[in-house]
Amino acid sequence: MRKEIQNWFDQSKDDFDGANYNFNGGKYYIAAFLCQQSVEKALKALFLYEKNGASVDLPSRIYDEENTKRLLVKSEEILQWIEKRILKK
Image 1 (cartoon, helix red, strand yellow):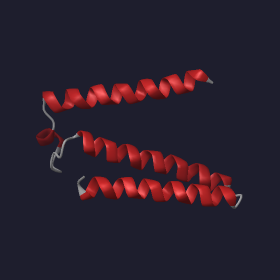
Image 2: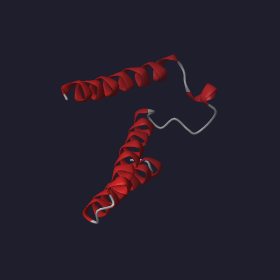
Image 3: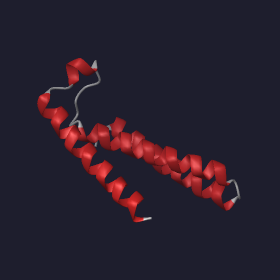
Image 4: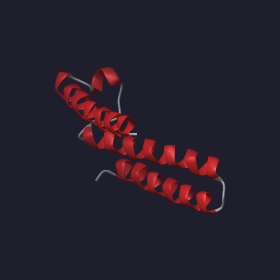
């Protein structure tokens, strides 16, 4: 795994640990915020992973039809998963 991806994922786990720590300390609003941050950073790691190592450059130079289609498919899967979770409640 690329270092950049590992860093984002590690930070997401650290944020989640911080969420648990704050929850146990009764700081619920901080715990909730860190939960959101944790998931956002994990999704960033996944996004970078799914780009298949495309270098950091201008978006117009990075994305072509093939890799953008792959991102659209993966994004739709995530959005559908979230929608199912939301509609379950």
